[in-house]
Image 1 (cartoon, helix red, strand yellow):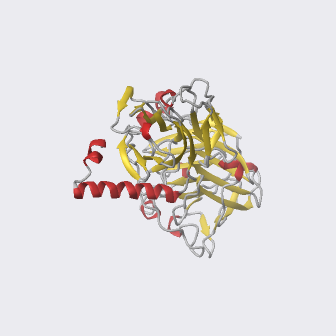
Image 2 (cartoon, rainbow, N blue to C red):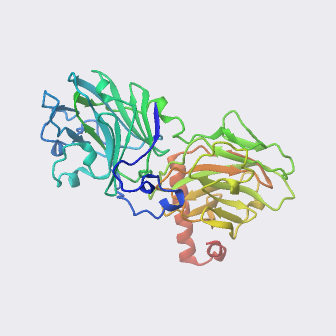
Image 3 (cartoon, rainbow, N blue to C red):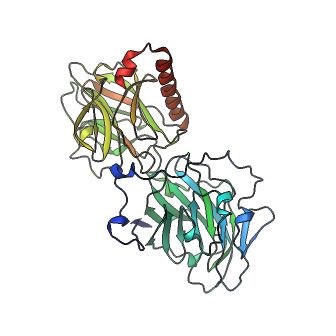
Length: 443
């Protein structure tokens, strides 16, 4: 398996080859945001006939494409999906089966994704190779990963050679929620490249297939799901047993965590989630929620919720949530922390008086603002500029002060949607009635 950071080959300076920092990513120009259509019907063609390159032939059912050149020397073998991909918990995924191959070719199949809808691509001049498609991310060729993003092209060498593919091989591509482009062959990960592409479900990605060299015919595999080998670390399902503070114990279900300190004076109560938050809200929002299970008394601070753009390698130097690098957090004794501000930022709400059974959640809006919800009602805004649409955000909690134990509410898309709706309703009620001055103070 190749695990590689993206390295540019065509940009003029080394600085531009680096992935944007979390703080800088939020200032990037807005990307195309197209509401995906409903799930395509099984009878709908997999590939768009109007976008077939001149050397391509489409099967009657629209699920298979064939390159008409038997020599393997001609290009123009691009096919684009008819419909946007429906997001999985792990990200966007599609898979093809190799039906025909040509011998003696140095390169082979390329798979990838584009943000440009078929009706817009239809108005462009034909593309010889898929790596020139606008707003696209592809891998294969003769061992390369390539991206064309916001007018800039980048590439990196990978260890997978698609010229080795055989008939009946299954090849899949995954844009993971952890910000990785992953290629899977027969269930085995062969390419894993970290790159910058939109993460929110509101973005509409279309599958791209490029028949090069050895591979001259493929069929889209309907109802394919990401293999288990490709989803490790890409799905948020519970707390991570490898990223626990020294004072924390974790339940077998990985949904509950508890501090071993009975009074609340010991630090080291930070616990990370096992994957990035899925941006499943209508405008790319992300959300997670915990229930207070056990309390301590006599402290002047309490539970902390936060997100970080990078998972720490170790927890030795993380005593509190504010020690997490590239992180946005809120709670403590009524304050928040952000990477772009050195000191803590006061907020007009404190978790010190949380009660057992209280639900505390953290909503990250599409514009990067953090909002704390207590029992389904927003109570305060926290830091801004969390790059929720640009880089993976990993959730964490800090069992600080009066909060001794919490249980994670099982992450679902419906949970995110409910939090967004509840927040919008509270704002509307306050604006219409004017009867909740505390709400306006908190804002």
